[in-house]
Image (cartoon, rainbow, N blue to C red; front, side, top):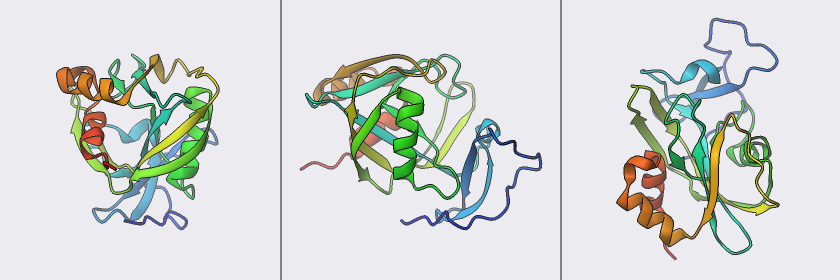
Length: 190
């Protein structure tokens, strides 16, 4: 699926959006843009389908970075997940958003950004009833430097090998975000 987000309709949010408010691209069932709304208001018990991304960051030893979501996160607070996730801004590709959010969320630069699951899409409801409902292409990237994550995003982080991560998710799925498990199950083998 290719999503053209360059020419979006006006915001569907009736409240005016300030300069510092992050916007999320809303999608129809076919994955086509239909508008925008503020990120701060999009995740509810009836979250509309919207555009996101996930990224799995590796280091020079091919270890993967896993992060524990900050306890203040609206969805799945305190669970372990992939390196980082985010939402492309209107007019920004998911790949461009990966570069931007790596710096903002993890405090690192990334290189070698590659899409591995371009069609990934999921819907999940956490214990509080808040829904994630995303078209979410999945990327890999290579870390440049040591993570210095934003405490608003990440409570803890660790490097691990891919096999150990897969075993941990299989043994204790409740400790991980559901999308991480689904991404690992769909991961291309080669």
